[in-house]
Length: 433
Image (cartoon, rainbow, N blue to C red; front, side, top):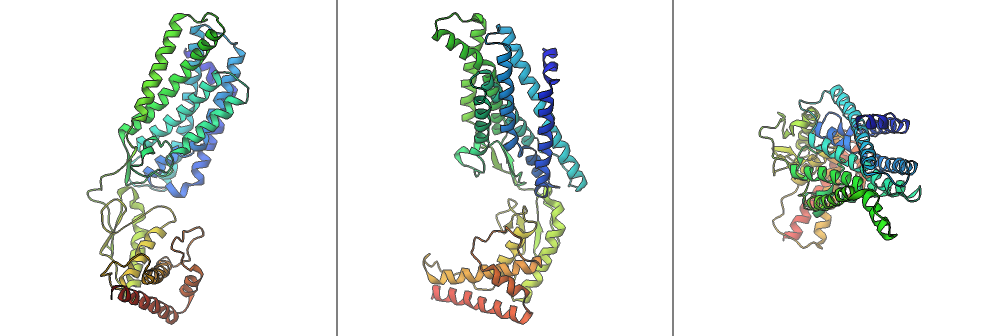
């Protein structure tokens, strides 16, 4: 078996496939390096994220290679020849995906070392998920390729099915019915962790596909032989092994379907790193490198709040650390953080609601239109910059007007702020009168 596997690994097609996939793995990771640099869980998830595209490619190539190999060796092999050849193909492809994922691990390790990431290391659960999905992809391609058929069908079907498998359960929230079947993670958020039982379910799914690749050709050959009235060519032992494999696939599939949700909330850190500013800013240990930048923004926000007669909360935590005021420390630099600070300043300028007006009350629209505009202005003042291109505007704020006021002189800016503050106060008074 070792000789057969070594022969498979030396084949030029496989070697070129490994090289191409490894280059694509590193290139796709570096294309989004700003999102995971210096944060170990994010870097761990980034290793598996490229397989949303590499998985279908690897499955299609494996199917094409298996189809060509099955045609070259003929339609009928003895049981030993079938098992040894297919097993060798699967083992060689396991080595292939390990090499590609290892290239991603090395890339992430080098980038994080250069970024002086905080103490810690890769989260193994994300690496196991990446390896499981990669192995399942190539095994599925081998399974379809060994079944024969037109030269185009198996590669196209394997690639499309693997891509659909990758995206079908993508982005489901925690607790969603299909969250147990997510296999590709775009983000490794510090406040989330992967359920061990769910990870075992993903490994089991990959093993089910491997067993399917081993038994599918035998089962198909058996059915074809019986349909034309021929004697099964590989003997009762191989047939019994194929039936046992089919039962294993059914039992394994049932266990995978009953797997628990993969993503679960992580227990808050007992003593998270915090700043000495007002407000106090606390982050997950994995994001401690962001704390100096966040603390500087908090200082600037406190000064802006005092200048307009507002105030900030005493403490703000990264999401998941507490049930109090929180922010997201991911994507768009510090803009999500300053969005939380700007909104807090805007809310502090008007009295709290003492009633619960109906949703169609015009006072509500007036209040929130003014508040969102103020929050956008304070956010730009804290960042000392216009909003980056592509930043969301779900509140439908007139960003052009806010940009104009941000660049205006101090007198005009204070008059604009005073007008919208008055609108907020009047709206609360009218709605609760």
